[in-house]
Image (tube, rainbow, N blue to C red; front, side, top):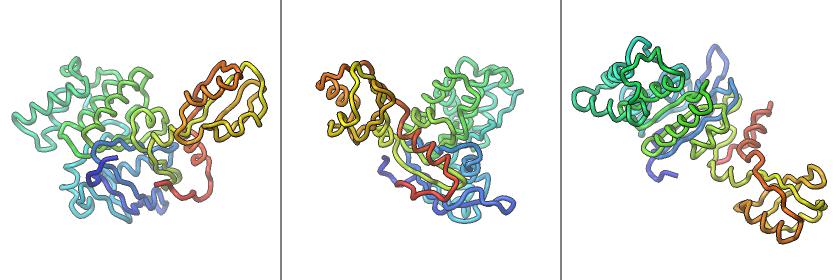
Length: 313
């Protein structure tokens, strides 16, 4: 967790549209050097939240600060610190990649040698060298997404805001994009919205789960990953009582006589449980991860129709 002051701070932020509350009472921070995933089903309020953060929409209530600057009071100052990729990237199909990024750099006040240096650096970071002279309209979906991210970072913003960056990509393109987002998180504060759990697990340091316009959970990915379920297959049948007292096992659920679903205790890894099973002579056939605590938490919240439980800090 970054120790420096947060780049982005939302305090009791909310927005209503046409008399309907879209997002409400949002409290969230994002610091330099971390990627925060805003996770939620379609219609949860993710895109509205990112539009508020990017300054495209103004909040009805609460405050949004960028490096301590109130986005409502000093919008031009705060927006200089933001790079924004909306769900539909604002690309000009008739321009080449280099022409478009040069245009975006000028919009952010870059010129001369600094513009040229930033253009070259951004093209390298986003792996666009092979297509820099190609028309954007002729690019694949994966390359267009990379160009969209490039226009968001060409001016070296402190905060990068990404709305569904992997939408519509094939598996190979999605993997490359996750690696790019992860690398951006090394030097910037990054917040991205998605409804894809693998994107959050692969890219993010923290997750904020949004449902029905309110944050229902905030937590670190590594803490959630530590609580994932395990599927164990044995060579010999055992009873539920046999798992009682085994070090590292918090609960065991029988699937059938030979297969079990285990919930590890905190800070217990699969290797320790495997060693305990082998030590008891039960004949370990298979031990693998089954879902994750992130998946469990998300599905539980996404299926909730009533007011949320208290969010985790």
